[in-house]
Length: 517
Image (cartoon, rainbow, N blue to C red):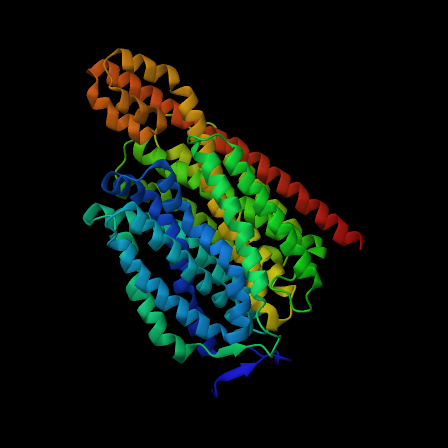
């Protein structure tokens, strides 16, 4: 109890050694929560072969985690402000470690989906707590900027470490090992957290508004359901998923109206009156979607089209994570020379070039061009992640840091999940369309009906179905499948270039407006 403080007027003082050690500890759950999404990319082919999930179940396995985190992180951020940020962090760490073991030893697709959803809930407790604690521990502006940059670097370096670690584990162990690695790290957080991290909670702001919590969930979940049903294009037509999305949007409107009426809302929507604040959060969603979508398609391209082993694919994928980590670390230096919106716009312009390079990748070439393209794309995102998150956290008083952190994390995880669902669905739709004629030819050459359906549904299905055909027909089918999948990768590149260019223009306009005011 003696180590607990309330934050009414915190003194501005330089952080000491304990705070920096605490920051190092906080980067661990940050890295693992992000890594847990990235390692799944490489594990997906083996996992699919073992558990045999349907296309809908595959989508829930890949992005159910991110959607659950996005759905609950707002509630968890506000809850941490009330009950204590360290307490919520430790609760989340205990849950994340325990459910990681459950995921590692899943024996069915349904069991793994349940574990992934619970992991998302635990991750929602972890992420806003880490960023809010950093804001409380580092009250001096320059130190805080450096600490947020380090935190962001740990967050996004998982893009490099995830594939490398996942590739190593998959080369030597079963697919569940990619989840099991989280357990000992969370034990370390539970042991060292009470020693290195002080407790912070805000003065009483009234009870948690359960009606707002319920509205936020009822708004998100139907939209998630609708997107997934539209993405997999299964039977029944679009009426039900479109209706679900409409319900989610309608409940979202009710949620917004309630927040604007409450004195202490679950989500302070008045912050969106700031053009820079609004631009940053929108950019986090769109950039997260683009990076996750291209990352998912890129890892599948390296393994399924170029036929690289998981370890080799992971090593080729490392420069993307290193680029975003490096640019995030160096972003504060750029921020001292340019206003944040201008620095972010410059970075996003670099990302446009990376997306355009993706459109030049060919199924018959090697991995080098794709790796360069993804690294250039990632290099331009550092200013947004480091400086943009600093803008979000500076927009609120320290006692509301958990709520602000939850907005940032909601944008990030929602963007990542949407990217995998929407860009993945766009690529899958183009693949199915382009494979109609090759699959018909393969059927004429003796491909059974069930195998033909699998070949038209996914690249992995085409690879698995080729053994039913004579050598020449199998080669033709695989060549067509590789070209069709590469076309989907090109679509993701074009979409990314449009998104990044639009965001760069948006931030330049925000910069010009701020100079005039």
